[in-house]
Image (cartoon, rainbow, N blue to C red):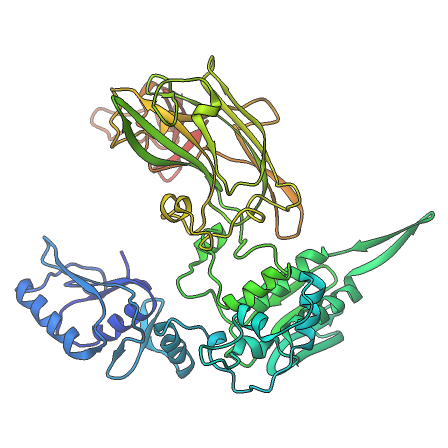
Length: 566
């Protein structure tokens, strides 16, 4: 264990430097300080830990303004763990200064970051602040709204609907960014030749509406990455880089950049690629892994983001990268109808990556659950009694079937008619007010309910400890190798199919029983004298379970490497 961004060691409580770290954790993210461990990670403990906790409390209460939420815990080894929670009333100051973590160090924030903390503490973003300029015109914005949303003209009511006014009826910074003229640096596009020393063209786009910044960026793209190809009598437009991908990349850069830094989005155009660098890192609270898995949808500039979404400049907020398990079987709990115990599960999408449809085939363990009437709990094979499709799912279930002989369910869905994907014409998380989203999806940042299924529990099943092996995927040849396939559109606008493993939520991991153990490869060394220690390096054994087979292999370093074979 070593110190990192969320963990700090203190050998004792004598120094007050830990108060800076408390400020950092309260401002930027929950973390722990462990007292009684030196910088090398050696546990030394704290003398009189109960008294030490009282002294720590007094130091925190006397020196931090405001006082953040924290917990103190005395461990069996006499160390003290101080857990500081990221709190709402930012900034949290120590001696009038705010701090943040930089890897395993604590440093003071600069004036710009302090201003951002103040805004966050007031539950505001930069785009919501009153603009310094109030003499604004919106000719280009009006044109785009007329062309894309068929409005007759722009007026104050529409501007207010778009959240471009403050509570004091003044234009905010979002309005300034959308105005025909402003003071913002936008996009700096450079077309390079063979290398970065050869500049073939450059377009600096600034001081105009960000909507027009997007258009001029796309115009520059078309100049170098699109051309017409004539074959016989047919004229075809060829794009060396997909236009939709470039357009959305620039749109996302405009939406997610920080606008309180007076610098450009940098676009570098090369012969074989385009590189885009946007000012600002990931939004506060969004980690690298969450971003790559597409689990979180955080908008740094939600007013601008909503307008871009309305104008169809972007397909969806926080599309990100398709997660490993975008579709799950979610345990909604057990209810009683007379003597019957009814388990209700929901099939739902838990990603904002664009899903164009899915093919899902799974079976149930009928010794533990049986399909039942969703209202009475009586056993039935009628899918209409077992299933309830979500009102918010606008896709078409081309296949919805229950085979009582194999205990198999099969659902195949396509994108909604007139829409691009399942979520697009259904609902936007947080804007529906539907209990299914607010309650059933409370553990997910995004939650798209698709359908519910009802099952009667066998009396032998512990309803408080339901195993995940109640459900298992059913492959069906080459077309459905795993039992679950999703179709989605990647960031380049290309439709892709992906085979997935089963994902459940709210169930316990099922225990597996070993059915056999066999030696697949003997260890490298097999000759020993009496009393020698056996060296198993190089040996491979196969442990076969009732559901899967697991290979345990000892490599040349002698430690175990685990592989799973389905």
